[in-house]
Image (cartoon, rainbow, N blue to C red; front, side, top):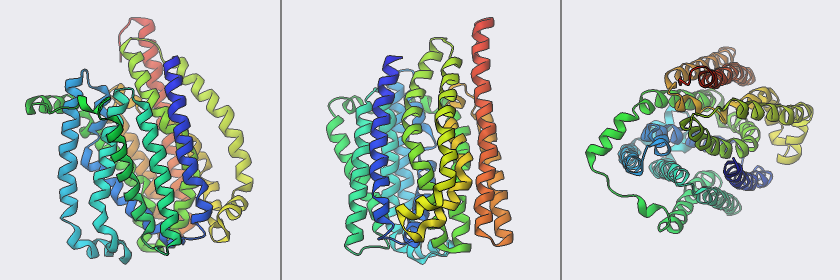
Length: 423
């Protein structure tokens, strides 16, 4: 338990520093870049994130769960091969960049589409390295990347902005920062943990890919539904309402979820490793999650109540008058953000208990409710209605998912108390 809290504290502090760096500069960036610039960035990131998810098929989660290092090496090899294939396919789309941009009614996207295969490759490579570091308990490498990437991204965004490179400066920064940070991370970590990576015979790779087939079979559709659902406002509303409205919405998402991700990302990674170890040792885990839920509710809920009354004013003060609307959007998101804080730290339970299929159903429910909310706004041609409907649909689905996850924990503990059998 001491090791868990030490690792959690290490990653949490790194996440806080990394996210804080990004947030601190936004009052400057919002006075340099326009909502349209942020809308273009979020459209690029939305497409890139979906392509990266398809590239790795969620197999990188199995790097931590693999029974031995030979299996883990095989999983790294499988992920790397899949990533190379996807990068090649995305590269082939570069000649069609204008047609792709036309689908989203955003002609400027074509000017930066050539960066997409680079972005996908870097994002996928870090996902592989991240989970290898977690397997090796090299949490310093994870935190080092987070901080360096955040510093570089912030510096590039400000530098490009002051240099007058406004339209694409945000996108180029999101490529340069991970490129440099990954190079530094590999250079530092090679002798300590990366030299253990080696070529595994193809039959071993096929065997380990088959053993963990639940990840592409259930986690990939689940992750894809979740990701597409998450980016639904960007992908669907950009052609209808323009990139400026999307920029304001994206800023609300950033302000709402960036502080939360300071906590959830580090807790997810350390909880994942710790709970997996506890289950392998046949130990109860219910009291752990009960304490986590109680602490989170008692600390976060009162803060959110206070924020509700000052968010529009606070957004205007921090970011400028042009961004006040983001504060009104953020008000509607507060209950959804709170439930996301709980679920994001515990959603790995579906993988550990091999309940990915049920997890997929919840993601489908989430996507359906979000689509209904956005659909109402589109029919009424009202952007705010679409955003409110999206937030309310997200709240209902995520709350239901958290209740289900805690039921898995309760059933597991009950099985240990009764006859020692697992789920």
